[in-house]
Image (cartoon, rainbow, N blue to C red; front, side):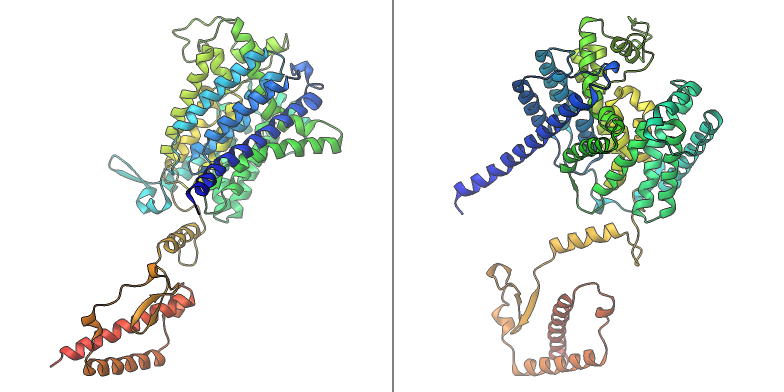
Length: 566
């Protein structure tokens, strides 16, 4: 193969990947545009949804920008931050970049500027995130399951499940005392009525609102992960029942979506090999298509409204609405939040309610936007980079907190808090949407015990990784031929080095002694069955090779002993 052929092959791989990502992003954009124009905008115009066809040149530009951002993301998912980045890209970044040109709230030039700014800020976070794993499984031992705090040593597993148990007891107890625990199978059309009843009982805040999100997005998924990977049906049922009670009692749509997201992470990380990022491009497209088909069959809009409109189209719409409003009005500068002691807030309502009233005059709802739209509401264009910087800091803490934890467990615990960043500020999500709770739980969670052990007591996942490592570093199988070990492949590179001439010369006495010793050793092996075949897990061919090597070594050793005995 010539150098030119190698160079062309090396060039074809990245070009082919870029073309594939461009096609996937293009299909994603076309699907979102079609659903928005034909299913969502005509029926939800009273809520401010609109669709204005954009020039094909502008659509091509935003698809190219979105593709460029997607290419900066990690291809192999070996850190929790990688899952977070891809999740935010799917439910927040790509809808904002693609849909802004078609909402009708900003001009085409402003929409392209918004796409470029959000894409640049997010790409910088992606490029700054390390690609390697936080801690390979071979570097995790029993000492990692003990937390050392001062002079005290605390078992991680005991601490984690005590915390999860107490948290769950307080959450469900408080829910029973306020809104009640209801066991009912809610139809998707009944969600809004139940949600209105919940809001009337507890309002928009309170302790229960903070506890519910941590329970639904972190605690229950962690219990589910334990049950799935340990093959414990009781834990799986417990986690699913907990989610069902939250959904039927509060009507939270995000809790309903969590079933799909968390179980999707379990499927994606089910094997021992690192997961690939391709699923994150295909999953949203599949969800939108399946939802549209289901609505077409049933003659409604329920599935598209719950999944596509809520988690894909709304972030793109509200990003352009926030830019439209706060470009002509004073920015908030977090004067309604943690900077209120130092900043004079120019409005009587927080930004989500102010935008809700702007979209639908007289509305009392909350138009919660994603972290980048919230950044723009507080500091304008520079606020988008402020939100990106806060995201990067949290990702670094998240990777450090989950060091040594199985990737599948961390992914199931962070996917829902990541999705909620499409619906709120990153600072608000720290307390009220499980970001901080999830990080703390992953920090104390046990590093082992998540996989079912085999008969020897060793976790199956660790056995598989150890065998893969052994196969990768094992020498080529050999056969004994004429007193020399020769590689089975017969290549010169794998042949054992020949012995020196002095060692090859053997006196008649040593030769006779060696043959006699060999016959006695063979007789002993014939009389006594080999224990290796009973306990050794190696294949039969490897066992034969090891036995032959042991026979050759024993023969030479006995011959030397007879030679040296007076």
